[in-house]
Amino acid sequence: MGDAIISVRDLHKWYSGVHALKGVSLDFKRGEALGLVGDNGAGKSTLINILSGVHRADQGEIRVEGRAVSIATPRDAMDLGIETIYQYNSMVPTMSIARNLFIGREPTRFSMLGVGILDQKKMAEESIRAIANVDLHLRSPDALVGELSGGQRQGVAIARAMHFKSKVMILDEPTNHLSVKETNKVIGFVRGLKEQGVTGVFISHNMHHVFDCCDRIVAMARGEVVLDKRIEDTSIDEVHGVL
Amino acid sequence: MKRLFKTYLEKPELAGLILLVLLIVLFQVRSHGVFLNADNLRGILGILPEAGLVAIGVTILMISGEFDLSVGSVFALMPMSMAVLMVHGWPFPLALLAGLLAAAAIGFINGYITIRFAIPSFITTLGMLFMARSLTVVVSGGFPPLLPADLPNWLFTSFVGPGNMFRMSFLWFVAVAVLTSLMLSRTNFGNWIKATGGFLPAAASMGIPTARVKIVCFMLCSVLSGFAGMLQVLRLGSPLPSIGEGLELQAVAAAVIGGASLTGGIGTVMGGIIGTTLIRVIDNGLVLSHVDANWFKFAIGFLTIFAVVANAWMRKRAKAIKMEG
Image (cartoon, rainbow over all chains, first blue to last red; front, side):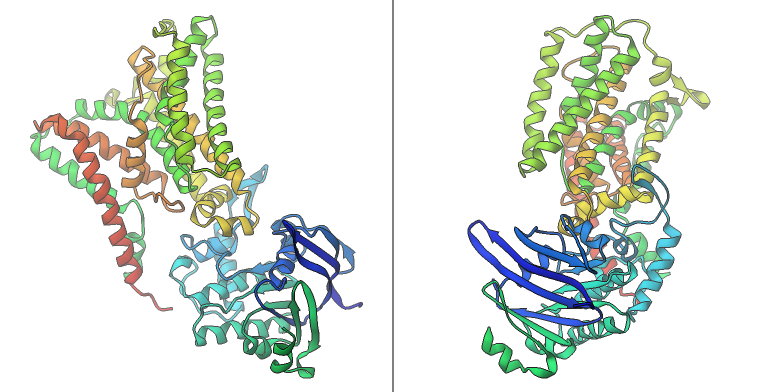
């Protein structure tokens, strides 16, 4: 698979006796939007947590752009260009949009031992551009994230991932608890990823959302991949059938 | 205009600042102009740095999402250990260094235990409150040691400035206030403190070393408290083991009056300073206006609740002002 940006081979994960991943092998292709579906406990969150550095696999290999890698922390994942967007976990509501965009990766004017003076001008300019790039219309970047709607927050999270040139964007249930209008907006973001050359991994319970914006669908059940097809070769009924 | 109004309503220290101005005006009128005269101001500004430095540390720690009840005990333990070392012949600079290191160690223990065992810092530091207070009495041997005569008071407590308005301690206080304010608002570390206290899972998932950030805040809080205790001992001329009792709650009250949130993420150094000043102004102003001084604690308690209610209300109003968007 020459065009795979991430390949995982034979991944296993046990949680205190529970075999949550049973030898998963999967290729994430460059520039593709992949929909990952499955019931609760099917192993999709486990797989994503391993790729985003939250958990470590007990066994198996991960290759990013052909190179074997070890992802021990969320920071390792980000440095490899893998950005994960969670439903709740990626924004600090008491901080401004600009500050949120740069959390943990603040541009500094000079620094000692990793601590330095913030380059606030750069932060303001780049956050305005980053937000505009994902076609999100917001008031100033100084507005608090806590005042944004759920969909707008997802938009800011996506803008952040784009800004840091992520190669793979994992969206973990990004449409949960969103209104129909907001959901459409997020689905629009996912469709937009392809134009920007970013690989998207879209995790959802909602089959319609996945079929709306993905090129390929991977279904998991009981810790294994049970279906892996192009969208045009399958149907919602078939996917439901294997779950 | 609307945006300006909204921005100011969102400032967490606004309620405290308005109350402070109102009270200064009230006390100035009630005391027939004595409150703001030079002698009285000199008195207030002379002791403000001690409680103020503690409040700065407590405020920053609260922004990072943690809490320290042991500051009053560290306030006493640090100068007491210095005094004992100096009695044993240590020179002042070395004793100062040892005292600050001891305070930093206590902060580290507070933070490490809180994070390692995932227990509330309220409990860890409550334990430390008793332990450090007890240690203070133990190292003193029951009798406060005599301070040597040649202490560098010119560096810490002497009066300076126009009309001898300030003590040197006030300059230390201003320097620390400016530096910590800048740290919080202008450095990436300040951003990490706010993110860690604002929403821990987000900070962690973005790769911020949240445990280290919190431990540094614990240590900073302890060191500032110890330093403030030393200033008080130098001012009083004797290391009493009982100083700083009740200071931990006053510092929390100051931080909260200044807009810091108990749940973390919100607050400013300036707010903590405004809160402390408010407490000092009430203490002094009640006496000058011939009000029974026993109302002091009542006033602080009332103000704490009032300031938080006012802040919550203002934040809600600010949120209700919808900008285009």
